[in-house]
Image (cartoon, rainbow, N blue to C red; front, side):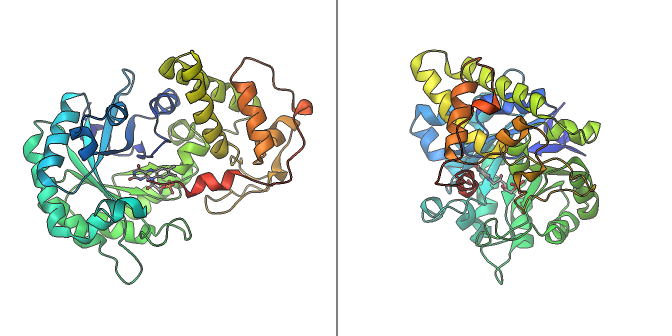
Length: 361
Ligand SMILES: Cc1cc2nc3c(=O)[nH]c(=O)nc-3n(C[C@H](O)[C@H](O)[C@H](O)COP(=O)(O)O)c2cc1C
């Protein structure tokens, strides 16, 4: 099935720098994801033939529908890169109009590009001319900052250039993750443009994804941090909520290690890479919390205390301190049994995991 056929009602794995590494995408596919997206890839670096950038556009054979997200400001270069990723097996190609990081916005990329709607039109036109059959999508935010929202204008500019779908992250660049996503604004785009809209922001549970989709009138929704915290989110969205216990979580984390070793290799260098990614992912996995005992749901924007932990293993998996994350990484890298009683006491430095939440593309 093509991207546009699969899209209605789907929960799409969002593009995420570092988070959308190939083995993690495979894990999400095994846990129900049908549409996956790459990490942000710079068209310029592809043009420069940089190997690390080419690694980002590689599709795993078991990915049913894989999109590559490109960042660039030059219509010809973006067209060239779109044709390249199509030839390399991408099912759709997306334009990054949301990256908030100064390093990129100072070069006119990401959220800075969204301040130039006419250029957005030209870029999408260039990409549409260059590809033969895959759709071109754009991923936008609501604008640069409050008082300067331009989501309707940018969405229309992209559609004018021929965009086949629009993805809307319901926050401004300035807001980062400080406020809840504005799904009413996402819905405005869904009503305004004639192509399917994919809404994005704060989805952590299956019922939230469906409610957000219906309320906003979007064709589909997209999950980023929710999929990093619980890769089984996709399964939950189709099969309903399941309280995933600590043993099952461990089995999922071990599966990631197996997929990652397959990808980076079992030699010293590969194992080093795997350990680095694993440690990073543990920084998100430790944020998992199930439905509360009183039937209410933890929210993406709140930090649930580890007090829900029902078993010593659950308590260990909820720890966010450096000592626990390092200890778990070492054990998951081997088949060693994980005995929560043998874990080190929490270190003085306190939680280290929240830092990982500052990372965004
Ligand atoms: C670790 C991380 C990396 C990200 N990298 C990208 C990226 O490369 N491209 C992009 O468009 N958005 C990126 N984002 C933003 C997400 O795709 C998404 O728009 C945002 O996190 C809001 O969705 P959420 O509330 O489900 O997390 C990243 C987010 C995170 C947490």
